[in-house]
Image 1 (cartoon, helix red, strand yellow):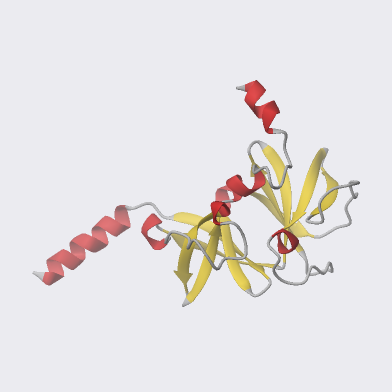
Image 2 (tube, rainbow, N blue to C red):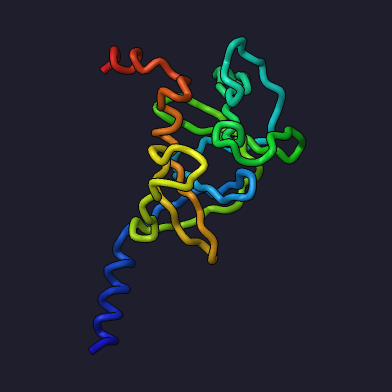
Length: 170
């Protein structure tokens, strides 16, 4: 009887769609974001600095005709040392119909998770506001912080986009 129940449970979890996430490193922690928002992964290159921008906005660069803001998540989340060398990675994202680059220490892997694998974020003890967290998942015996990148990039705390423009277009 228990074997039948176990097979039914496995069949149910198999029917639940798996989503893919790109995992990356900030400081000593593993993070991940929905891979569907990733446009490309590239090495860090010098950016044009913007006057009076917050420290986590490194500047902008020209990506094949698009002017792209570059956000250093290590500075934004206050994790790790923000060094820029040949090993520094920029993940180009397509978020809210805009292209944004995020600076990370390293890209790790593509991981597949079901919704049930992702636990809700705690209300305390995280290096940044939990409104930008989708949740936490255990992968290979370590915790991965799942970032809600759309919420972060479109938030007023980053102020990358004028949300009134988006409201006017709707």
